[in-house]
Length: 516
Image 1 (cartoon, one colour):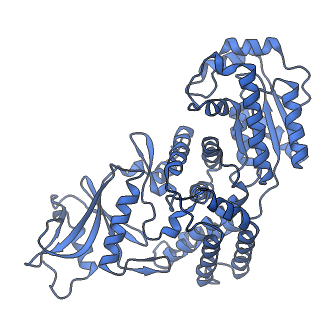
Image 2 (cartoon, one colour; image 1 turned 30 degrees about the vertical axis):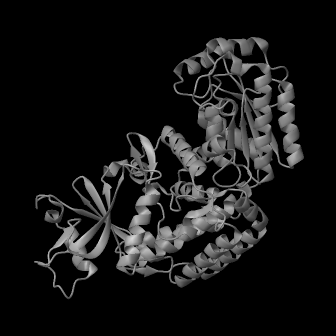
Image 3 (cartoon, rainbow, N blue to C red; image 1 turned 90 degrees about the horizontal axis):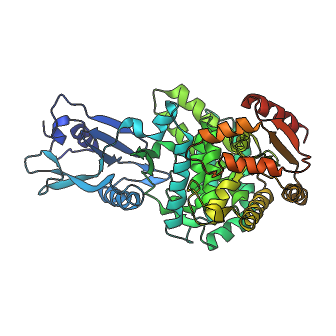
């Protein structure tokens, strides 16, 4: 039945979009509706149609048809930067002279607007992949590269994103969280978070303004979490960027990244969060903003706390959402009380398992999302303008190039330590001068230093080298044998048996860390 010409509401539009026939489908085919606080997405056949809700919230306003049209157009324009083949365009829902509703037919009265998209499989969403336990290190590596490339190309903007904008976000979080206090959030904890975030903005004001004035504020994604990333032919694609408020999307690039890091950490995926974090820093070299990262993470968790509380207020899954909102609040507080930094070096000949151990240790050290994992094999490639996994010839491994690599490793480590972050320095470290220089850097930075040397049988190292695929290291068994023959001189670092199970190695190292 056609809706009355005088009483058409968005609910009538929703009912129309839920019908298979509205999309040219057989009535036996299902149209699935996915709802968010600001939109409804109708999955119909090979397409997805996104309808902006007729709502006005503290942070968005879709309360008129014209505002919804502009939001749809912005969404298509912004998201074609990262997912050009996903977004087909904006189409009108029209009421024809006979009262029937149509999608993009023309000739009728426009009653609402839709974003038309290509539908992708449900199991392509990273949030779904995480739930199934299939989030591989390769996906995290490619995702970090994708985000780094996106930020590098994104339009610079100094209008927003500095200290005043983050202060506005902090105050908005405090107001919205207070709205659900004490019925959902503990009043004292909500008060503590509000005070801590305001103090953190004040403490980092100079850094935030420096970054705004020097190109680190860009028109990014704004809503970069796992449910807004999907795999397209195995490659991560970002979509569903914020379109309704430029202030939320034009912000510090590390604030943009912080949403993803916070989302991974909240889901107990510390290793994945650290891989994205360290790989992004490898690609961008953006160590200067790390001092503000705890603030960025806290603000992101605070946003999710009150958004989840809003969802809980109108959901049947009331108890689960309430618990999740409280968890976000706890995280927002915790990241502003970071663990102290430490410089931990992992050395040993090629194939001894340095990088595998370093990757496992990094999430355990320092502030969320753990230590910056600096791997010399990757730094060498980036310094020479190559992808980290691209094989290089002998000219890339001269003593002069290696000296530059170790110097760059120390420079980046020093910047991270100065910002309050821990560092894992992952390299062969087979020269006493390089080992002493790291210990000196730790002393200069006023942080504890732990040097680890992995002792391994050459046969074991050769076996591990043979098993490697797609790795940043170019060392083969012959290179390893040359290293063993040359030796490393007297090594006064803590010696670890590389043949031990990973859990036992980590247990031993935790004991050493406890002595710091």
